Length: 269
Ligand code: 15L
Image (cartoon, rainbow, N blue to C red; front, side, top):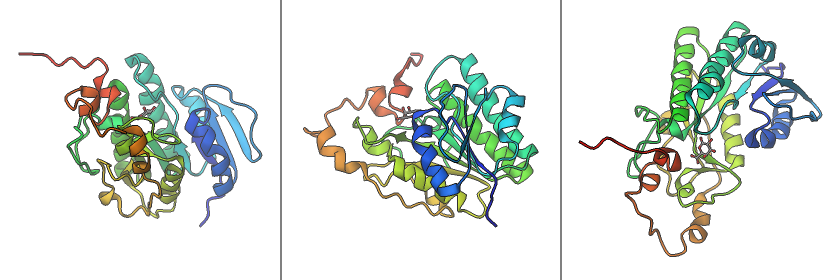
């Protein structure tokens, strides 16, 4: 049965949110868009609600009456634990708990490759690997995935966690040859998740059909995702003289790249 309730997008003022808004309206009709900052004007078919994800009653107001939820809100970079605690850890709990209380969902949750960023470029991952976050932001995404697992097992909720690689118009760094997901492929992934009859807790790698991808979605074959883009078409521009990078540099060695390298200082014995 088609869900006629508005679709909810959190993080709607962000770069991805702004790109997604008109496309979600086209695909699903009425959209409720939320962010902590104002981003008026509303599009035709859109209702804007300003809310702080860290505040449960605000989140309840946003979630109540919604159907599908695309939870892209929160902080998307490394910062202090206090900030991550409110926006990402409490924020994601608040969204999932409000969805449970108000019978909203399914949920597509923007996790991140930084939940597994301390695997190396030689590792090949599927969704079954243990998390190896590369920063506190990555830890919050790992927490969100665990929370999704809990809400799926305990309450039968459907939540897809997208370990998004690098979502941007096109790759601009050699690392992106492995991690890139085009906006169009990200939208294809969101649509494929919502078209899946039973998601439970599904972990997916948000990545295009890149020749140099490190990640496999074979454990999520119940989601009919067929990426069409491939970062390889940018390889000659990004690596005109072949790959001469220092593979021991943590920013190159680890899948999380600069996020893994920032502040990297393992104890020496
Ligand atoms: C992320 O999780 C960030 O939000 C995004 O800005 C990119 O830096 C991306 O990861 C990446 O790893 O390239």
